[in-house]
Length: 395
Ligand SMILES: *Cc1c(COP(=O)(O)O)cnc(C)c1O
Image: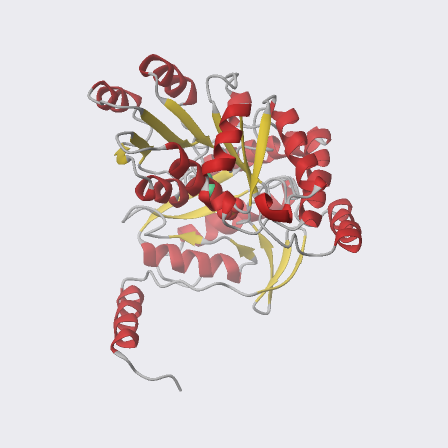
C-alpha cells in the first residue's frame, strides 16, 4: 500500500476528471502480432492503427540483420555519441540516409521526439521567433516552448497569416511544420512555405515523420513536392514508422549537422542508440529504397479506401496519405465506435483531446502495404455498420 499523500489525492482527482470527460486513456495490451494480424487482450483482430506504412516492422530480413548485428556488437552502445558510443553502423546509416535524401549529411537521434526538441532548441536563440502550425506534433511544439526563442503559432496551413506575422517580426524567424499532419493526414503547403521562408529569410524546418519512406517515391514530402534541399534546409525524419525500426534523424548541410552536434542537447546528453538497431535500420532502408511495389500497393489501397468510404457516405477527412481519419467529433462516441469496431475484429484507435483539439475526436485509420484489398473492403463494411448504429449502441 502506498501512502495517501496530498500528491496522490491531486492525481486521483485529475484521473476522475479525465474519466468523467470520456478522455481517460490506457495502453491496450498487444499479446501477439503477425503482420496486420494481432491478438489484443484475448481478441484476434486486424490492425488499422499502426504507422508501419510499408509493412516492414516484422520483416524477416530486418529482424535477421538485428539479430546478426547483436550477436557481433552486443546490445548497448555504452555511451553517448560524443563519448564512446558512435559505432561504424551509426556512421554508415547516417551516410546512407544522407545519400537517399540527396543531402550532404545526416545525424541520428534516439527518437523523433528528441530530434524535434533538440533541433528547435539548438537553432532558436534569444531574440528569434519560432513559428509553428497549431496542429504540429507535440514534440515540435515542446521544442519551440522550451527554446529561448519566442514561440508563436499560426492557424493550420495559413500561409497568408504567417506571412503577415513575419512582416512584423524583428530578429530571425524559424518556421517549423509537420509535412504530413499526424492526426489529419493532410500535407503542409510546403511549396508556399518554402517560397515565404526564402522571401522573408526565415529557416524552414520540416518534420516528415509520416512522409519519409512513403511519399515522393520514398524520400518523402520534400521530394513529393519537387523541392530542393536548399528550399527545406532542415529535414527531420523518423525510423519507427515507415522504416519499421526505431529512432530518427536530421538531414541537412555539413554546417547544420556540425552545429547540431555541438548544440543539440538531446543528441549530446543521451546514450547512442544500440548499434545493432542501426544495422537493422540499414537493412530496412535498403528494402524501403528497393521495394517500390510497397508504395504502389499503398497508393492503391488509399484510393480503394476513399472510393469505398465515399460510396458508403462515411465522414472522410481531406487526406491523400495512408492516414485516413474518419470524423466523429464527440469523444465518447469515438470510444464507442472504437469498441464496436474491435468487436467486429478491426482495431482502430479513437483519437481524442488533448491529442486533437476539443470536439474533434476521430477514428484514425491507417493503411499499410501489408494490408490486402479484401481487408480494406472488410474494414469499410464494418465501418458502415458501426457508424450507422445509434451513438453508444453496441456495433
Ligand atoms: C511520431 C512523430 C514524432 C515522434 O517520433 P518518435 O520517433 O516516435 O519519437 C515526431 N513528429 C511527428 C509528426 C510524429 O508523428
